[in-house]
Image 1 (cartoon, rainbow, N blue to C red):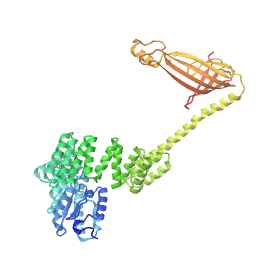
Image 2: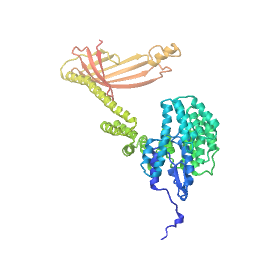
Image 3: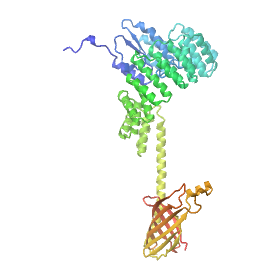
Length: 575
């Protein structure tokens, strides 16, 4: 059976390459792919990164191109999609040397020896300027390095001179900027000082100058995507300078429907960056969504869009993009953030599951902190403490872990204080109830008929066998009328005398010296002012009373009906 001829298929990238590249991207490393002619390119894997084509029969043809791109990468920041040309120059790491030396083949050993040499040159120059501030010694060192690398195309003289001035700026030597500017004027076609200056101007807030240099870099660039990156960096600077019209225009000027997918996606991405700086959330979302339809595996942009949706209250859209990320590019950050979205949508079980996976599978300590907070909220303090203890074993754990630990301590302390208060509040009520029980059973003939003071006003009490009742009316000026009188000086139709009244009704049952009572207060406005108007409202109280042996005072324990906020007060017999 013939399933297909060889001529209908192409070689693809190996699973091992895809996996290793994925790890590199996750660690924020720069990637440069070497793609053999005839091999299918996995656009989703590459994102917006550069690649170099080569022929198996003559691989050395691509070496010059590799050196050129490496030189450019080394003066660019780690996130080339965000800003392709800042003041950053290559920082060669000793750990990289050690790992690559372990490979053990002869050519690699030679390359690593060269790399170590450059590392030593780079660090010695930096230490002399930034650490020791020995400019004269650094100048001598610079001359030595330039002589040593005079035939090195990847690290030419201008590279080391630019690095020298960059270190001077870091060390606080103000003349370094002028020296770098002069270097750029003398060598207008040299990209090293131009890239570094553009980044410095941006860092110092001279956005118009930075934009101008980024545009110059875009004009020199032959690779389409690199060109768009520089244009995007210029647009970002214009946007930071509040010149949004220019920012959009310079990107739109370079739009061409014939561009390849990567370039078209990059155009929309750069437009979204401007809209984000402008804080036009809907415009940002529109450009970002379009870029993602063209290039769905731009995970950084999708993460940013998901976060923007969440911050602006569009929780469903945010969830959609986080879900895509978790299914296609699962990591601790994506799982933590979808956990937050689940929580905001009240999907509690899914939220906890996501936090748990982010913490246990990817050592995401922010997810551990969020999970701990959920446990704290439900009172599982020991479990939360265990999560925090494990998270602290992870190097550079998220600071929210410490916050969660403080929250546990605060929760324990607050609950202890609440417990003490709850128990202390019991004592007065407990003592009153004990005395009430005694008053209820100890025989005494209490004469309580007469007028009594209370926290509500004077109340007459009349006893008829076991029943006690009383009714009174109190007139008063309302607070609103008093304030209005004070403000307008007693004019404008406001009454100067009482404009309101309250009627008090009490019904009770007496047993020996104990009284159970029901009290109702109806308050109404009779004056009708501009502020108070007419109205009537009612409050109902219940309570217990204990009559003193001489029947001259009554201790009351009272609460509003349906509530349990108890008030204690003493009543006195007036007549």
